[in-house]
Length: 431
Figure 1 (cartoon, rainbow, N blue to C red):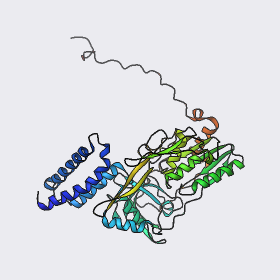
Figure 2: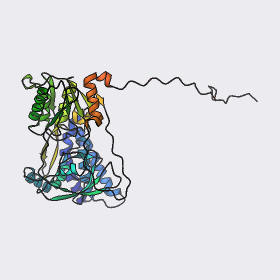
Figure 3: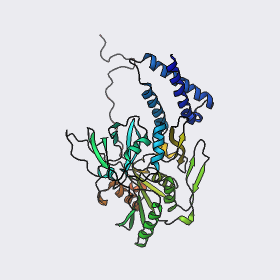
Figure 4: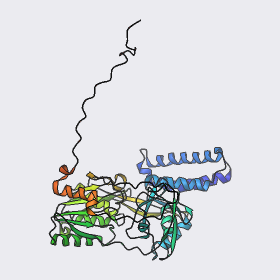
């Protein structure tokens, strides 16, 4: 191994050592033994790549891929930023800028769309859960730090940013120009449904939305609501603290959630009866675009047996993240603690599983060579919304009555004629 390679290996090893320390406590061996064991494996692999790979590798790219792969394996919302990227990140983090309204995470090595803020440029362009960004401003997103991608998408309101999109609804990637704007989160909507059922739709749980939900509940009860539906589908923005506040509106007692990490002591969040606003029967709607604070609320209401959750498994993102500075001036942004359901499940790891599952229809793939412009997410009438109709059925008839009846057992089929004897000899007259 030449001097240059040795120096590079040492530098890379020091960088990865800091990352591996985060996961050392998860190792079955002692922390130091686990770290050095994995570090030794990485160093040997790096040496083999340098000496045996079919061509001279770009070790900078190899190292970047290794770091991002390590982060993706533990936190799909994590990022590694080099010194220049981190300085730009700190500079832009609190700047008043426009955005396109995308919530992103790592997905299959690309930047996946958790969801788009309703009414944003991304939403109007039809981007939704499951789509993936192939490029941003002509830069490939593979192995791109998540935080850096978010910086590229932000900018001065009124300016545009071009992205290349891989979509579930179309076979070929397409390029879209998104116009940045100051994101305005939709107000909490509510209305009365037939059968004295109050419907509340929260498409975001940013600060202040819990108060809007409380006002909506009180308004619906004044209109004569006897049951409530809380729609948290496509609610991917908002802090877990706001989800805690929403859950407390319907809970008089019990554990809502707790936060815990390797270096973060457990912190319990329990219901305060003084903040409860409704005791009416409740159903919660969720889908794959439900994330963050909305997941905290859904898990708390479900596991405290306060509500049934109807729909799809949620996305899985409820954690406390912060930058961890590196010696070279860069930083890693990763979860330092996770929010857990009352039963002890880390929401980011296992998501929230509905008590009544309804799978939303996937868009059919299109086959045209030149697809037309993307369409925004269409509105659905209440009577055509299968998930909402199932929630109404659960509220009025009960979960057991609303669940489909088990299929009757199939009649016993006659066993096929045995062609072989137990010893494996063909049946038939001996010759």
